Length: 305
Image (cartoon, rainbow, N blue to C red; front, side, top):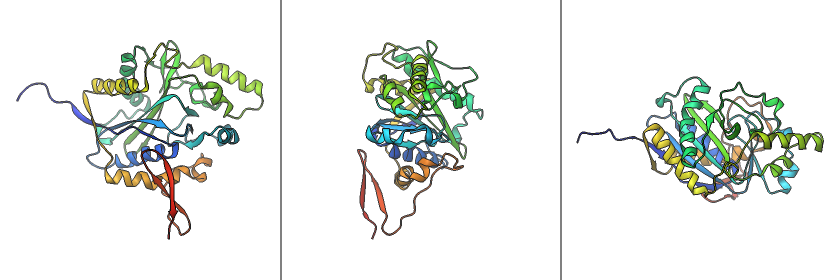
């Protein structure tokens, strides 16, 4: 039957509510699987339990008050992507993995702009107009520990204020991009988790952050998290003429996810911002505990025998 060609199929994974290490391990497992033939562009949305402070891959750990995070019940994890700290609490986090076969623009800024078409369409469906920030960007060294404090060419802005921040990492031609939109203003809690020389410095950084970024609520949106997910799905389908089909992980992806979860929970990865490669599976040794991942929690199994 002739007519309009059917849209290409991309994959939408189930939304999982879990800790930061499990989320980052899954993102890396998908990035590695994207090097294989037949991997479909894959999107997923994240819910966080417990609330998590995620660091950029090369961010100094000294910018984080680990004691404050612990006393507040906040997990701390280092992302495989760059940038600065994001508090995943009342936010909307997306992740998309694109295989090399899709041939994204080789220029990083152009690749961001390409994928941000879907996010701009999603925000438009929510009644929020946004555009890619085309400035040269701020020096992260001058912007403090919070990711939304700095503007880069990967950001989307609404009325001059940052509304969505994203970051990428590439491996064997495949691209992982994930990012966050803030639903509610949790800036005071965020800045209580960051390290500053004194309270005056903290207050000044907080004021600059609040002036430079905007939450969805402040932008006039008053809906539910599920509404954002639906608009993201529609925005990407319409922007790229694709069909996002709900599918599960493959056995290979599931296995890679479980193998990497311990690495993202390790102090070696969290503390080392100078690593030139992404973390690897922690070898199983007698007396060490394995990590069991479920769709709802991180738990530990019995010792290996």
